[in-house]
Length: 148
Image (cartoon, rainbow, N blue to C red; front, top):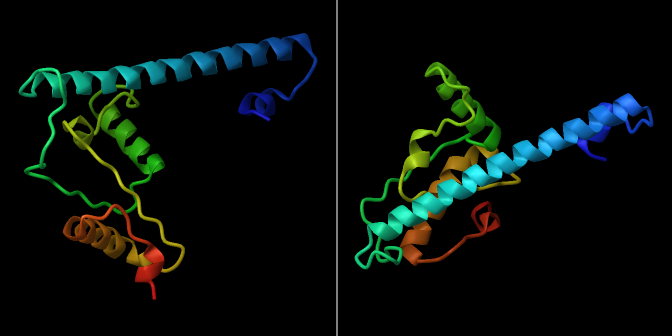
């Protein structure tokens, strides 16, 4: 059952059916707009990275230099969306289209650490995973090994 079905109750009434169809069409159109906007942003970043490479056609490779590591607690999707909207509205914009400062960096990687036990260890686990993975050149660690 979709959100549109819940909102308009799968009725056979012609007016309700028309309203449901209009709602679904608007929802689909809005979703497509956001998808196309994100796709264009990704393609723009790839073109910019390729244009700054030595050959002009390939993405730069090699060892990253000048890496900045931001560690934040409570930065889930809902919190970041609220921050984005607030920042945009403070500048007189609708908000959803606003980019946070770190979203405009040339390269960004996001990581999330989840623990089933002892949520207070979140920051410790995240820092440990980042720093140990750099030292050991590993891809991932299991949190269960750290909680013993």
